[in-house]
Length: 329
Image (cartoon, rainbow, N blue to C red):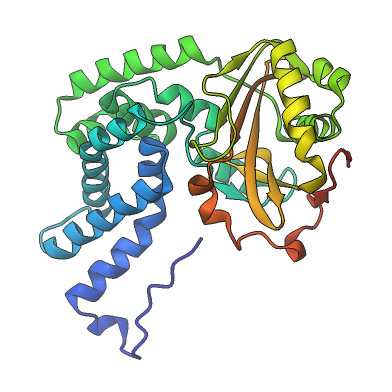
C-alpha cells in the first residue's frame, strides 16, 4: 500500500511546515511500523493503538535533531508495544479457549510473481506467530527484528536500550527456542494452495476418508471462537479426532458457507463466509513432505474478523475465486 503524502492545499513541497514534514515522514514508514508491531502483538486493534501512540509521540517531538527518522520511529513503536505487553497478556489469561493471532487477509498475488515473495517476507505465518507467543516479549522483539526484518544486533541494541552482547545472547536463545518448536518449511505456495482446496472440499463435503488421507497422524487443530462461536476449549490432537470433529461440525454448516481463497499472513488459505459475512479464517500448516496437513488454525472470533467486513466482494473473485461447499476447483 502506498501513501500519498503530498500537501492537499496546493503548497510547494519546499514550503512545507515542520508539522507537514513530520506527517509525511510518519506516513512513509507507517507500513513498516505496522508490520513490526503486529508481529510483536498479533492483534490489529492493539497494533493500531500502538501506532496512534507512536504518532502522538512523534508529532510532539518533531523533526528537530532527528538524524534517522526511521530508526527513531521504530524505537518508539517497539518500546510502546513492549510496554503494552503486560495488558495484552492479562487479557489472554482469561481468554476462553485457545488464543490465535488476528489474521491478516489479502487477495492472492499473481502466481509465481516476485511480489508474492516480497509480501510473504514481511508476513509471519499464523503457525509461526503461535510459536512466538511462547517467547518472552523481549525475546520476541529481538527475534522479529533480526530474523524477520533483518536488523543487525547493534541496531536492535539501540532500539531496546541494551548492550549488543546481551542482544546477541537473547537472539541466540530465541532462535534455538523457535527451532525446537518449529522446523523450517520449504512447501511451495502452489502445493499449499492445492492442499487447502482439497481439505476444504473434504471438510465441507463431510468426506471423512478424504480428510484422513490429507491429515498427518500427529495433526493438531486450534480453534479460536472467542467464546462467541463454537470452538474447542483446547487444541485437538491426532488424525482420527481432528477428522471426525471437522467432518461433523463443518459439514453441518456446509449448506450456508461460501469459501473464498485468500492469502493469510503470507500463506494461501481460505476465508469462509456465511450470508455474505466473514464466518471463519482457516489456515493450514503443511508437513515437511508437502503432502499432509500438520496443523490447522481456525479463527472464528467475530472480533478478529471484523476488519474483513466489506473488504471481499463477489466481483473481486477471479482466478482464486469462490468454491461452493464440498466442491473442489
